[in-house]
Figure 1: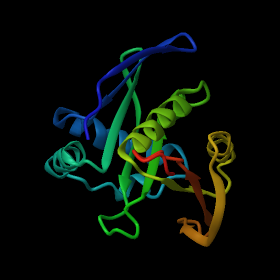
Figure 2: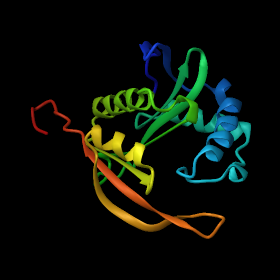
Figure 3: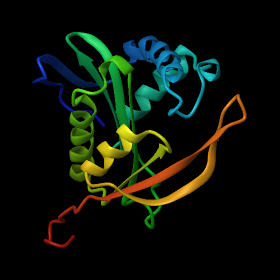
Figure 4: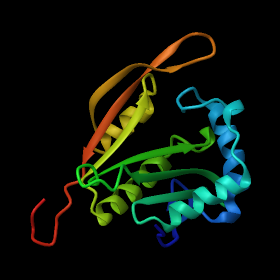
Length: 190
């Protein structure tokens, strides 16, 4: 899915949100290697990032061509800051109303409202597309993210014990969260 590029000011910064382009593939691989090393709250370690440029280009092409997925990049004062995305769970009629979302930012771009602004645009696009439910998982202990999701209306609906295992032998749970999107259909029903 392609959305129009958006420019706005936030906390004294110039923000640009736009869809990824194939030319962003190298930047996105480097970003993934860096951001996975900045926090224990993502799904992999930096040494597990083995994506080729062609694989990343294919990923970007697929997201842009899909009607049920969106990949947005954020730039702060011209510098790449991170991304957010959603993808429908399946084309199956029983679950096609659901979409999963994710977001990650370089740590230096957290704490001033960028994540919230990105997620608000993502949720808006999900509603426009007709999804009725947004879903995500957040790593236990990531209090700032949990707080943000709750402020956006997400509620905890479950927990997967020891979902993430770390090199030192420790583990963290995955907290499952859901947000009803209250999409109004053409006939006025929800």
